[in-house]
Figure: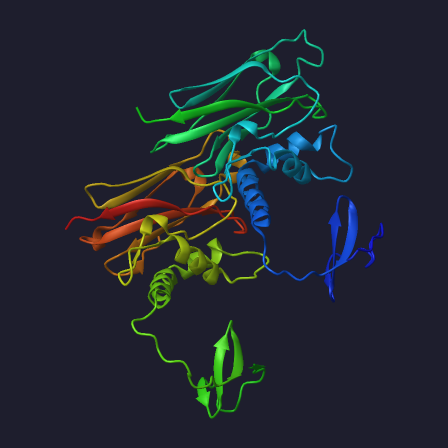
Length: 215
Length: 214
């Protein structure tokens, strides 16, 4: 495999003859096109895991982009997408191939230095999701200007409600009004803090599964 | 395969002339060599694929104008209609061979990343007017999604026809369609949103079925 910082083919990306060039970890790589002779079970498993996570992240792209872009420990040249896949694959996947599924409890959507929300809780009351936490302004690293970011994720229909700039830390409460669903719904919830200048963020926190049922 | 750039003195030819076939392919006049004679024997009874494919492609051809928007992809590797057939062949066919049927609740007429239809509902009043409503969740930005076009697709099962409803925008949350001329017919309704361009589309949603009383 030949490797040049600017790439053997200049800044070209794609297929030229029997070589292919593409960016990998911040460099442009040029290599020969391989010949595929089928794939092993392990390779299929990796593909399945990537497909599952890609499908999961689609409705919450904006949230993850903010959550992992300011990760202080991200490797050089990595995008937020690389970081998301590196963290969650395979730790957030449960089951044995071919029965793989996402373990919503272990999904990480944001990483940073701000302490995570203390005693966080989500309740569902008359189609209103209520996220609550403790302000705890004495702890080092916290600030009054911190804002909450939260997600209500619907795994069955692969859709989500996201709040990117919610209530201030001192308010200790953020609500999301749900539309009037016509059938039973499973809701997975996450939250994290972001600083006022958008330069620091807390780790994301899984706040549990709720079930909306018509009463 | 040859292209015809200049029209002949006889105008446009279509069909088989000697050993070549003149035809239209994606608005281009093309010439192909005629296919050879079939060497394999026909399989009887017909394989499942020969029953399923015409069923789906005939049904979807009714909604061609909607599918052109709903399944349009910028890279264009697969044309929109073929993409729609590919998806619905896998997901929207019910029943056992040879009695395949369309599962209307699973038919998808558009696929995309735009905000989907939430809390959709339909009902028919005494004057045979169909009321269609939906909601906008509090987290979505009205400024961004409010002017999205709502494309309502009503399929008349009796006439095998698409009764496209008048277009509305997402922030209206409501639309009415008069159906007094279709008494006794069975209708199936779908809805999806497109941006104003319409470059972005949402997934289509099946709203339900209604039989209009006589």
